[in-house]
Image (cartoon, rainbow, N blue to C red; front, side, top):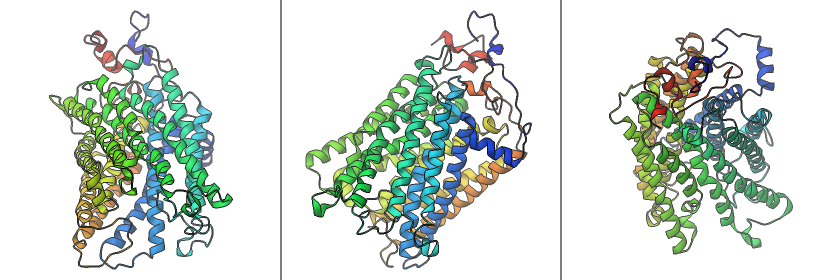
Length: 566
């Protein structure tokens, strides 16, 4: 592909064909391969597969919670089991579903997109995955520890935020909080290792010609996410170590009776927690940046501004943590600062939404499943953004803090933003990973059931929050006007669950029976589509050279290449 080179463009993308079903081995050889592999593609799929397994487990817990809240005075779950379920559901969705799936996306796609043969540090990459895997099962092992499985064992019951003093020895006896703390400490080590690997891979392994200005926006976004991970995880690890010192060595960091501060935990936690929201959301933006242009048949609108918006979002997200703490009694100056800085996040986010719509405007839009999930994401994220601006106003937040309005906003931002784009990502890149297309018919059932179920579940919670329903309650009395909204939320979960079941069946069915995809089924433009589906061990037999942001467009249209205009 090099201009003036003796080789033809096609020669630069020569690969070793490996078609689905060609390589088969015994179960023991497959397991041995997975245990010892350092291949970024296999590790990426292991991350995503593990995340989907924990997604199903966390989803079952959420369904049980909604059954408990469907009617007043219900006794489907015991109170202590309820507390453990919502703690494990929240912790799993953030640390065992969101984080591994985004790391899986980065692992699989970043080296392919920059024209590299693997991550910069393959063994460190495997270390990061196994640290996550160990921490996940260590957290669930808490169910088997202490009193045992009867009455739900001793699983953590302090919420995914683990506010002090709930985690003190006085309120959290036994070892459930220790399992929570140690599991997330180990997970944090793995996350930082993977983030370092993404940064080094992006900086040092880009193929010839791929300047930062030609790098796919997907890679740009993950570069920003990796820096956010390195900045945000250490405060969480620090406060977890302080908590262990409190619990076992009498350090009293969070003990107000001995001069400590419970608010100190909240500061540390949300210095991590708010950037974490963007760590989970920005990869969804990354997928949108690649999918929307391909299905609009247009280059992304405003590439430099999109890069700048990513950096702005990351920068602002580091300075808005205390908007989670308007009700703890901060000064008026502090409230004003965090209110204004929170509203500022809407500017770069709005730029991105405007640019995606600008990309679609005038394009030849193809309503394939990845694009449908992207469009659904735009609608639901608009609602999430509007309620976010409402909660950034301190007096409004004082009225609705710790109500179900916050639960609705949180799930629209994080779960909606995460899941819609994860589904779009999987429908878009599944053919590249496995060489087969996912079933369109099953995918459409999944799309409509999940989309309708999502809004039926979470939109009524805005209203129950307005009516005064507090979050984290086990049950409620009848006659407060909450019944109909809770029943709707619980019915929505059934639709979501049906959609997820069809999605899981689609993944399994299409792996064997799906239509052969070919190397570039979407007529896309980035480097991963230049290799086979699935890619060979070393991605590219000969590393490619690029001259524009759309190297495959240049290859397919030598009479009108992008490099003439960039």
